Amino acid sequence: LNGAGIAMNRDAFAWGRRSVVEPDAVLAAAGLVPAAPLADALDALVDRRAQFLTDYQNAAYAGRYRALVAKARSAAGEAGEAFAMAVARNAFKLMAYKDEYEVARLHTDRSFERKLAEQFEGRFKIRHLLAPPAIARTDPRTGHPAKISFGPWIRPALSLLKHGKALRGTRFDLFGRTQERRIERQLIADYFLEIDALCTALTPKTLEIATEIAGLPEMIRGFGHVKLANIDRYRARHAQLIQKLAEAERNLKNAA
Image 1 (cartoon, helix red, strand yellow):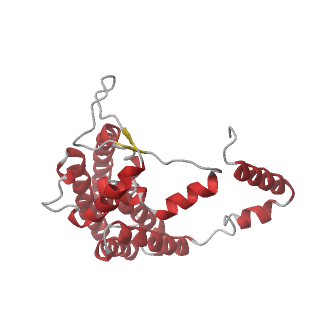
Image 2 (tube, helix red, strand yellow):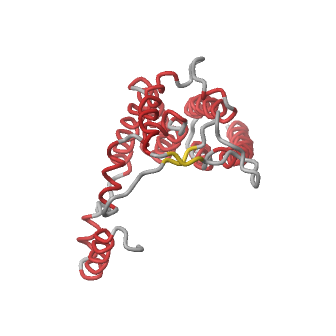
């Protein structure tokens, strides 16, 4: 596009032509067929997510994630793999919230630079668009923090900052004192408690609602004010589903 990524565009064109003649071969090369059984897909997903959480924080943090998914899987049984999958995806989503330490880790990841080099030809410079809480100015049009462009000189600072993940969630976590970070940590704690409660009372009649509740964090997207607004929508929908679950449980008791 505009003279950039020429080799990548040529490859994409070639694969497109081949997909017309040999669609099965292209799908196989893309790893899209055959579809793995849900149980195997869940195992693979948990392994990938646990490795990410180990890099994100540590092995103990990843262990908490594995334990929660295992509990959901055990409570739901073979008929409830969708519930366990929802827990696996959404517990990870909440636990891997992108704070300043994670941004620093991702921006200094060598694999990121390798991917850029594979996609773009010639010499290029990397600039980091960040909105540090202490120095980011407020955009007069939106009233929200505006991102600042930093050159390569910021990389040593980012390399140092990424090691601050050991402070994440502790009283020494200066970045963790903002409203957004406090809410993110509380969402994780609430989710673990809720999944534990759902597992304890799970029945075939409530499995569908429980799966929907377990998947609700998918609603929480974006960063900053966008994320906070989505959290409000998430909480509203959560309240509706909790009421629906309570009604289903009452009906089960009355029918007993």
